[in-house]
Image (cartoon, rainbow, N blue to C red; front, side):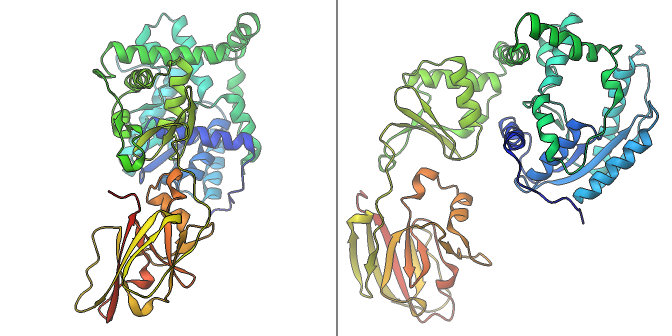
Length: 484
């Protein structure tokens, strides 16, 4: 059992965790349920990677393994391996290590620098461990500075646009880099939150290594003499180059002619929306082209920053994420779609009102709750058959405490959904059911005493279900008062 206790992260470290999660979602690095190998050298980047993925393991239902490659290139490599083993044990994660064979010649007989040879040896070790462990992915600790440094090295070597655009990509084959949008300065701010201090590699200060000269000499010079934000500008240039190549080669796919937005049903307000699968089916260039076109359709001027923020923060963000657009438009992530609402279209939750449902058959209207309820008693017999429509409920009459009550949800509400082993917070149930946040204030609860018996339109409580022992049942049907 590990000794690491997950403590609440301070704000800077939490931002790193947030960025990593958003990067995983934006690039579809994980679907959920994978076995992931964490490449851990023991340095700062890799230990932050380990801590971040450990904190995200339940969100993505991951099986994790710590893997260390011993290059044997300098004294103390065995000590590093033993330390990473200790760190893995602290997290309660399995550990494996490989002594890599570093070859100074490439596959076609070309000579390799020590750094190139070590990199090739690492990737051979990763691929071998993937096969042996039957894992799905390998997580690497590269961050945004690595990407900029690689671009500059390739630029100085005369690389073309395609080679520049592929400088340390977020995802390639089974390898993914969740920290690729995180800067080294942010990694350093995360370090005090780690349960184990990172190892320091003295070779990172060796200016005879070209990458170190780029890192410690060239970039600081450019920041001092040319542009203080040179790193951010270079990363943006990389993104633009990547997107431009995608558009040029057709990777983004033709977006065709508009309209690009669908219209929701009248009972949902007739707002326009973008289906999420249409957006996610495209590569980065295609996604940006699509957002550019639909913003024009909405009458919004599509600036570079607006397209970028809408894609990253809403389309590729968490469900419920929202963003104000020019012209009084609000974009909201609603799980399987992005909804574009005009200001004032969102219905505010009505004030709290509790209505009584008597123990009598009939039709009852509740204007304050905008709901109509039909109630009918039945004699039960044989095996229970539950209604297929979630707006209809069949409950055991003898388990109900009349008069029933109908009200909006309240903070802290709990119930036991049909088929669930125990009770849970209604809020958690709604998240799992992918009910958009803006609609949760409109959901009603039918109560028997103080217990929720039914959430109309969603699920009945397991406590009031009809069974083979039921003698008398109650059939209920709910409809909005403005239902056609």
